[in-house]
Image 1: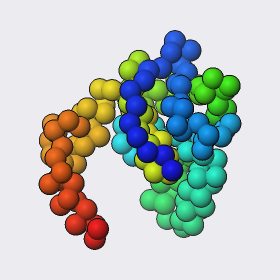
Image 2 (image 1 turned 180 degrees about the vertical axis):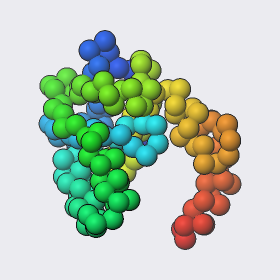
Image 3 (image 1 turned 90 degrees about the vertical axis):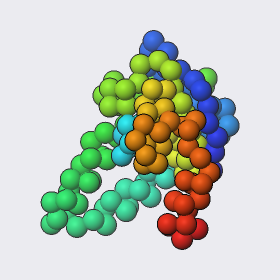
Image 4 (image 1 turned 90 degrees about the horizontal axis):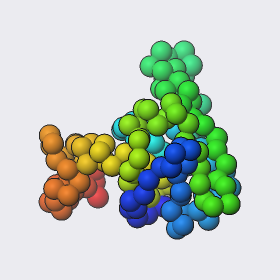
Length: 151
C-alpha cells in the first residue's frame, strides 16, 4: 500500500527518485501513465495488469469505451527502477503533467501519483472549489465528500 507525501525533483536526465518507502512494493519494474488529473501514476506491473483487465472488459463496439482504452494505453510506459531507486520519465509524460523540476509524490493506496509542484497546488484539490490549494482544503469538505460516497 502506497501512502504519504514527498517533495522531490526530477534530474537533468528525466529521472525521478522513487521515495524509499515505495521502492520495495514497486519492485524493479513499474508502469508510468497519465492520470485523469494533470499528474502521472506509477503502478506496479501487477496493479497495471488489474487495471488493464478492467479496461479489457469495456465493449469494443462502443466508441466511448474505445476512447477510454486508448487514453490510458497510449500513454503507458513500462520502466525499470535502477539500483538507486530511479525511474526515467518519458518526455511525453513530463509534458502532459507539466513536470520541469520540483515534484510532489503521493502514495495513493494502489499507485503513486507524481505531480509538478505547481499543478499539485493548483489542481490536486480543485474539486473542493475554484482556486483551492492543498493547504486550504479543510476537514469539513473532506467529511462532506466521504458522506456523499457512503463512508
